[in-house]
Image (cartoon, rainbow, N blue to C red):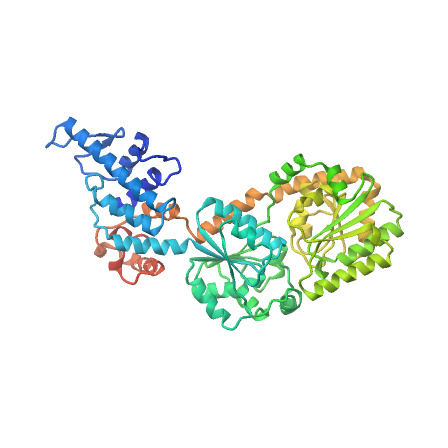
Length: 567
């Protein structure tokens, strides 16, 4: 067994010429020492102290040092030119150019393995594809599930480890957000004829899939059939016997039904993909439908540092004044898409009771999240307004459309409501906690994983307007209770909903299914190689065949000698 000078040389190049710290072709002696120690050289040549070299018996020490120093400079200039030609990163073309350049300097790169540049380029292109990730969302509307993807891609694109493209069924206001990250946005409708065929063709251009929401089930099922690595993030808590109703009636997703959803769940196996849930309750909800060994819980994190900076820069009194509220107002906030699932009608009923029965005359209600896209949502907004009018409190209530920037609403609020009848773990809970706002939430699904009754807030039965009004009134009557509750919520947000923890976990998941170039090269260096194909042990033959197929290569002769026995 021996180690390939090729792979060692490439890693040295990553250190010396692809590093952001290198700012000119005149490389430092430190970088040169790294290069010299990383590659094998003939016995007569041992690089020392940057530009210093040991003489061979045929040359004088001084003349050889000068000659080799000059060749070093020439080589590094050529390598720098190859790097600059392609910009940052290690693309297939850049790798081929760099390796070609290295072969022109055999005295510094003792190539005891014959390298075929075209095969290296073909291999690198296969790896480029592996680092290309297709992301799928159920819409481009501004909602929690899509904001999660945006936050994640903001982080992943800043690392420049993988390339991402986004696929979604319809246009929406968040297209611009993703395009600002350099993420291409494509429209593909599951309801279109031939969608599944087109989907398979599209996925053939990628190495991995990141599917967001349960409505990406057709994408996940296609990835499973193609043997592609995938990550599927499930935000929903749909009862198993209501898949069709939620898909077609609530989210109006054509081309998605219970059959394809169940098939995707049942086909998830450990090692083939990741199924991620933002709450433990969901794995219990889908118990018996999915192999739990293929699942994991990753709580959605929030950018607490950004929230703290916002609070530092903004004045609560001024924000409340801008929104039309005085210091004496007791502001009740319900933030989230206005729809039957989130129960703004229950909030309206409870608010009427708070004013009319409990006599809270300084109460004000702010509902944020109205949108006028689906007819059932338009009808529902009218229903909420009707309840407020019949209760004689419409003049105390405001219903606002969906807003891109919502932090000011938390800052202005006195109490935050999450009375949904179907919910997992909405960001509104952790965001309210980061602002130290007391919460009143339904005792359903994943909400008890974030709120302990009587500590960070109160949990009430779903669709119980009286219980909701009673809980709100407790905070109105006891401001110290509101402060203590908010402080406990802040502690929980920092502990359980760390943005850093969420990012790091998804980094690991995405890096595993779409390895970055540096990790791919590191693996090659760490794995043993052999001089001849015939020397490969029989037990490695199957592993080698798998690797060749993964590269898109059909015969052993196409694989560079240095890569043949990687396993």
